[in-house]
Length: 614
Image (cartoon, rainbow, N blue to C red; front, side, top):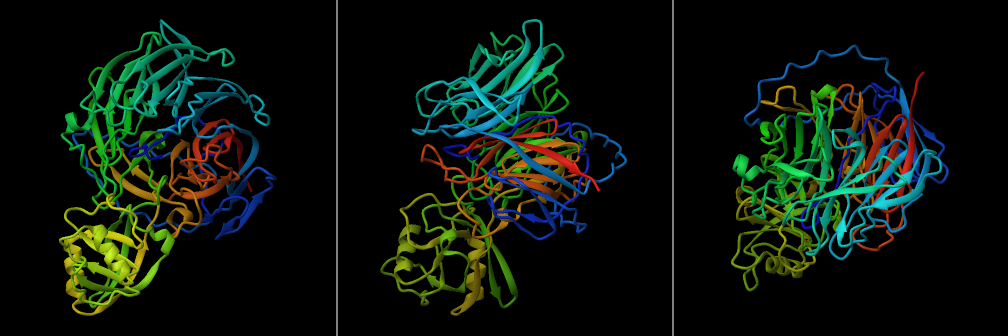
């Protein structure tokens, strides 16, 4: 989820012991429950009153792979790729059957974890919308009848979004250790990580708290044991921007009663990156997430527009850069969370875009004398959203300045107007062209186009593009007009799969998106971007907000294929703020054949995943 003020939300680690090593795909396009659409044969599992589950037969059609965009930074020597195992027999489909669910009353449900028959669900909060209900503890030993038993970390004025529970053993503590990230909802309160002994989940005991300074606090985190030492790996967004420690912290919690910071790391100090920079339409650089590798000496940092940072933490007092995944300037970035696959050879990277507003980045197409031309642009935040106008198939005309009291060089009525960089504001240009009957405005940016935040709401869509692109369009237009489609592409973000066997040269080998995430206009109110990935063997389990849970076969990582999906029924937002009244699956966690899901509005959902063999 976007970190409020910029963006936010969690991911998680888990182990799934399903006998589902490798599976095939079918193109499956599923709307919110109970309707189901599909482009291939489906068998719908009976799920009365509990959302929609779909198991999908294998389609042999390969999926097109998006070209790689990557650049390495000071990496360690190449890793020898593990030998490819002999593929297991391929199940033809996966069934997802709802087992149980539990409404969690006040809503704003965040990430979740499950261990030894107890689930732990965090709480979102920001500004005045700050329920501070803490991490709810739920008995799921009977998964058909989950039961709320208590909570921890219900700290007034804070959120408790991310939670990790691991069994650890050190000289100072042995048992089940819960760590939850604490963030200030507003200016009051203190951010950090709160630590609890939940060896007996019915009688949790607070052990310690580590404060992280001036920034809001810990957004996402992980726990990892290195020998007889336990480390908390903390993402503290914008900490470096505050002039404090780096966004990534390593805290020794071997004795959770006395947590102690060992190191801090940030991209400005370590790599010289400008924290005011970024890529795409919404520039922001901060550490959103920290996730330990299966190798306890490596950590992956999801650093939003700075991509994925891979660090060696074998000496936790001196993190060392191993490599970096970077995107191109027209990619939106917004690297949210990751999961390893293929024994660490591959990395699944989830890019989150379009939770609190529809994505700003887009392309439009102009039919020029030289042929169709695709132009990259950013939709302004203060303009009428294109989701309200739909696709504009019309004409583009160049009107000159577009400022008040300036003559228009062409009649914009019923058309999209291309303006020059004028002596007035973008808002004034938009209001002038709106009054003249234009359906949208395209304007050159003084630098890279961004989602312009300024101005008051205007009655037409406003898109900024590069000055070089604007000049080419003006030249092609002359005094005439050209056919235009706005947008020709506008979608939410999805999953990227990278080969990281050589961290000096990581390669993007595939992209997976749900049909709803690429649809324009979106299929309904909600968020159609990916959130968190989890992996076991050849399967990826993806929480995808309004598209629910998606199960994707990654046994061939270059050709990911969806094999099943489950979308919980929509529920009302109990707090009536921030989120719409719809399905919004935040977290996913795996244990045996059970899949645990948290929905922002409805609460906890438990689904059983089984292979269907023929």
